[in-house]
Length: 187
Image 1 (spheres, rainbow, N blue to C red):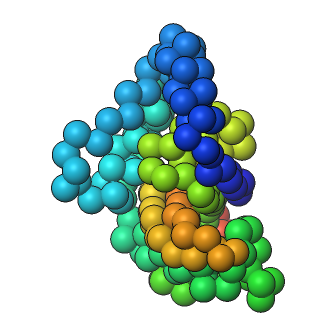
Image 2 (cartoon, rainbow, N blue to C red):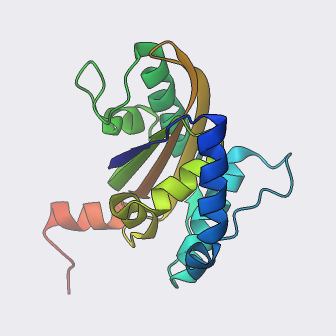
Image 3 (cartoon, rainbow, N blue to C red):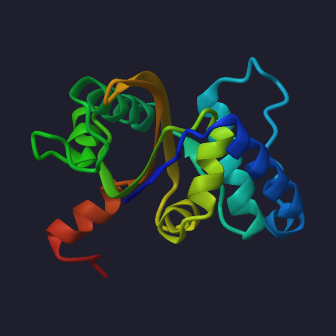
């Protein structure tokens, strides 16, 4: 559960960043992440999942599947941050995203959250997550099978911005719950 905050930059700084980015291309290509949203009509949920699964594939990990309930919870979290002018895993009411996940009906055994703000594109936010060990840990965790995503624009601290929320989860296994309540398997 980590967040990343992008910083808006001046034109001069953007040029400097572009120069550094071009020089750093060889370093970033080690991850072999080619972030290109070729089809601009591709829904952001699909694109966000494709990015995560590309990274997981490069690490020989099982691919995640989109879960609409997790995406709904991600939207709720992103909208709550915009509506209540905060950027944190804990809301101003003291709630964490787990209550929003449960409110959608997603019955999880494990869940994780990545947040980002102030990036002009999903690509930028994703690069930020890849460069953060705790975010990358969520992206590469073998504990998750499902993925949800939201990207919402709005005002934060008086400025236009975009909030990005990635949610990762694994549903409770009904068979495991029955076994745990009964004390185990019968021979």
